[in-house]
Image (cartoon, rainbow, N blue to C red; front, side, top):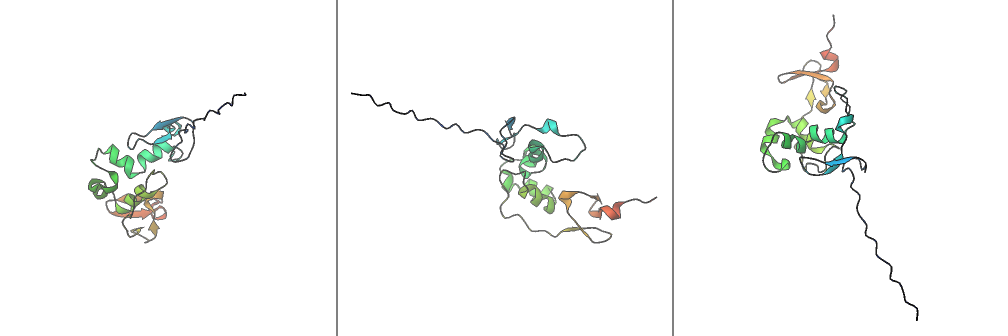
Length: 146
């Protein structure tokens, strides 16, 4: 009588992936929310304003990262300190952009920011403006001509 060999079931071991870009290379976990993310902040060039680092983008451009850095208590999604300390347009951006693992549900509505001089719409998250107090100037109105 011939013995039948049983097939061994192979275990599928999940590979850690960056929760933002999906890469599997050099990873670490975020300090704020313990999610896998690219360990790539060393690739950022100071003052380049590049958005090429998953780690830096999550740390600097999300409510999750901000909430952790400011040492607020509780969950970032319902933190009154975060809500009160960030202008509504930027609060919505930080809570809903592509650098989040989890996005803010039902973000508050806001009026767009406008240039104090020409009234054109300024998108705060994109830069290209100057500000003094509550006044904003678009790039064109900010230029100093000699």
